[in-house]
Image (cartoon, rainbow, N blue to C red; front, side, top):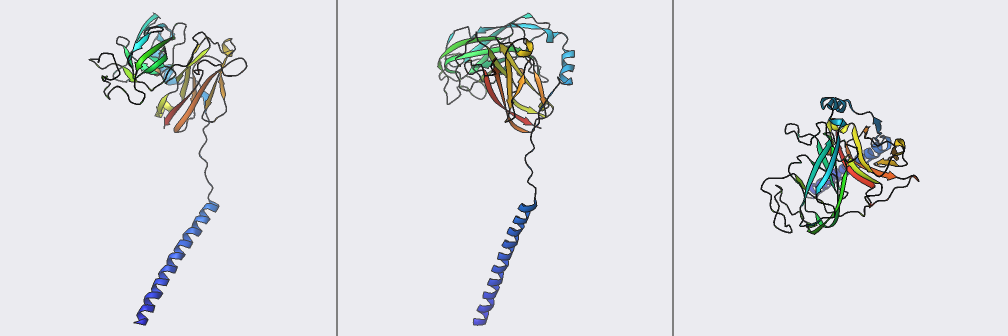
Length: 318
Ligand SMILES: [Cu+2]
């Protein structure tokens, strides 16, 4: 009886010691690994400015003269200083001027085409393709708002001629629920908080995030952030274009005194001194922040309702 117990007891001790040894070895192994393995730092992104991509130059050739167009845009609704009841704001635009064949339209086959960039307050722009029917901004909250719009190309580069850019300030009464969108997934307008009739056909439009206007002075220098925005995949992610609209401000390289500063992630600031798009190559996969700022003669940001310094997050998928 005693012998049996001793045997059993020794076996238990052996197992315990064995387990301890295994534990000791593996922890020694850990130490070993930590001591000799070189910890690889995450690769750092080195962006460089590259020329306009050949793919876009090719597209421009196919488009004939339309990239030399001088489109003139008018915001028909909302009218300047309009007061709108309900949370849906119908946007109607009128396009005229020397169009040279330029006309917004989404090609159903490619999902691409000329379009208008429509910006509520300082939110990311929405693309508006078919000007024949109104575009709806849905769930707009009560308060003062700004709407900015300008024509754009299929690759999202804006037209920069006089008259292409329009801004109106308007007010929404009632407005959308800050917490809940007032529309369904299919874009159908629900009855609550909304005096607009339910559209019978689906319209181009967008549920808006809640925002109100900055205290913008349309007579002062204004930088309107346009691109980059959203997600960039594969070939579209290299290079990525920075593009913006400038009102009441001429850049240094164009004979004026302003500069545009851009900061990607935590990189050192860089500058754009001519009003034209730039293309940046070398993006790594993942999320990046892009900040655009308008600087005055003193190299300090020019204040105008908070719109002249804008930071957006983009996602690069390679
Ligand atoms: Cu666009």
